[in-house]
Length: 91
Length: 139
Image: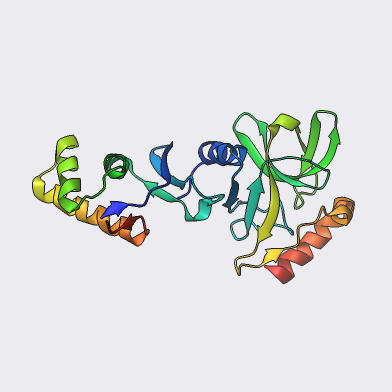
């Protein structure tokens, strides 16, 4: 899978906002927010042609003090939330 | 997620300044009966060609924002007032106007009429009664 292109990540308080920079109309009511770790993952896979849950888990392990099991669980949760928000596409 | 105004309003202003249209849901009751806070959405664009009667997003003091109607303009000075307010106006310069409302959308997806509310602006003395009727019949 890969992320849909055209989004910009903007810091907003303690969160990050994913803004569709390519569209003319930005709906703040449908805005997608990411916490710090999700934003970290997004930044690191935004330009990748392909990634999977293990890619995200490895990124979490490289940055945070978590167990491999916890990293994989968090990676799966992140992928589900991105899929629910229609942020992912097949390669 | 509810973000404080001082964080997300500048972001709206930035996007509008880039030429984008921004939709968001304002809060509060100060623009009744034209905008129902927390319910209606508004579309904002760059504040070009400002006229009395326009609804605008303005910074009236540092990090203090209102979405109110322009009641007067004299040179660089702009006087604002909420349609749902009985007394009290705000003042800012033209540069304090961050965006202009071009559409008001109800939750059902319909656009509310966007007028300059000439009659309403001149009915300040009757507002208390009219707003009371609105609260009891329309909410």
